[in-house]
Length: 414
Ligand SMILES: *Cc1c(COP(=O)(O)O)cnc(C)c1O
Image 1 (cartoon, helix red, strand yellow):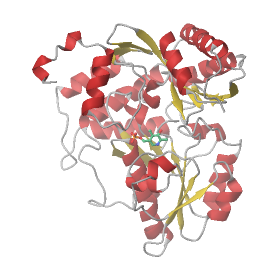
Image 2 (image 1 turned 90 degrees about the vertical axis):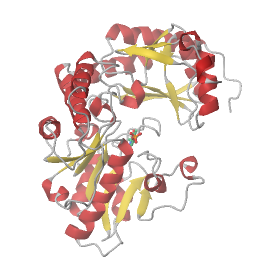
Image 3 (image 1 turned 135 degrees about the vertical axis):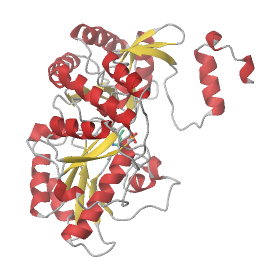
Image 4 (image 1 turned 45 degrees about the vertical axis):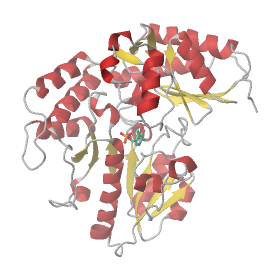
């Protein structure tokens, strides 16, 4: 349809869905809700319907949609300077570094944009550290990863995915990765060789369906890595910044990864900002020219991330996540439905595992005004912005209860 015939204000959900299907690649299967504005944990669609967002853009909007303080930082910085490239310096990057250090306790950071880029950066860092510090022979470095991991979509990252669909048709793949079962410290120990430079792990697996490993796994893994001079690299792009009721999920086990990977909520959903955090001991392997990104560390992203971090602290979102998450899980555990196999999670990161496909329930929840998305077919992920209030949780729970307890058995059940 020629653009001059489009009267935007007269378009409805089905028109937008049609346009998207006609002109965009079909690499997603979104619920048919077309959002045009949002605030806090509520989103509104083009037909005037309001929904409670229980996905929070995969935890990128922990601070809530369009947070006014982050918005202000974005608009102000956008009127000053947005991009200098790292050919020159800017006044926001040093302050971003310092505040990130103060928030996390990590010595230093290397900024990127998307999560996948930060994971790639962690992989490069571990390899370079492996060669230059550990003394691994040229091109022999190995990194250990876990079954059912999710670390992003670049060729190298899907090279070590165990998800067939993520790899199918995208080879040849990057070598140098070994896989162990998630949560199995013994297997980690057995997989380590003198050429192992890193162990890359999500402290809680998100895309795999909110899988919490056995208690003590991360602690054992940290000890095994330490003994074998292997860098423990925690991907906290989704689990970090308050989602699990701690600032970072690794804190549930009282350890400290050698490399921490952050993204998503780091900029509150306004802008892609990611980073790896580590020590000078590790990051000193980089010299000028080794690695970089045109947009990484740009002043707009840094200003937004600084505001997003401030909101996290000022509004005590980590504490809220712990308290309200426990409350939400306790409510969900009271559900009576033959369809539910397990309710699990930490903080406001909750998985409801079903006996059959979760998608029809997500569709039904959408009708009720609650937006959730299935993950791995059988799990409904419940992960609202951390600014959600108790009464909004009650509101959502009532609707989840209605859908899960009253829905007729799914027709294509096993
Ligand atoms: C989302 C995610 C990524 C990838 O981040 P992008 O910004 O989509 O590239 C990597 N790891 C984990 C654990 C994630 O949840």
